[in-house]
Image (cartoon, rainbow, N blue to C red; front, side):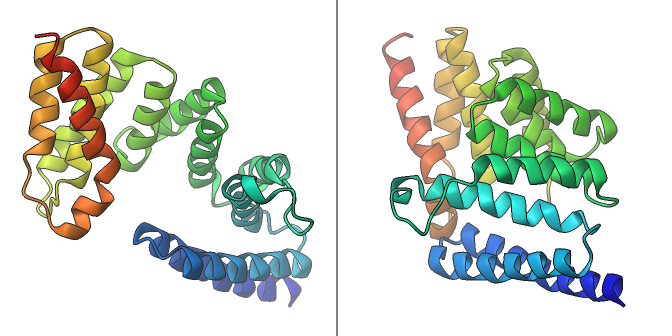
Length: 236
């Protein structure tokens, strides 16, 4: 019964974490944090019910890492401790011992390692997922980002160009991912001093007619597009 109860509690906790993730995407930070806390409480309860339920380690470990990272400026307070290394250790355990979450766990770990600036390990793990599922757009995004941060410009450009073609063909394209691809390719081109191409790519990224909600989510990429377009203007 303990094992069955553990899985039920695990799914309940996972549902809270997924809802938290969706709220984060729309900027509802406090509500997202509350859901994440409830989700992790359930996952910790699931591990207490079944100590071999390593799938639960992924959500707990991720929460420990990101909570510590986002609360860096609060670490002097007694109730927030730095649990980043403990979180990473739990995710490695989940990947090695969990039955169902090896690839998604590895993907989450890549983003954490990039945040930690451990780009070499991030790229190694991202390659493993992409090699296992080369058709997965999900894993391709992660590898493109890991290659970009590792300054593997040719690999990153190739992947972002593939992703650009793929997202342009989607029946529902709000241009958000298209903008990200264009800006990343423009930044890579800037490293090669291909200023004409930089200008054209950045200009394309800035010319979409966007819904206000999409414009909000694309804000950082649009600002970057403005920066590199201006940079290129003085070089052409």
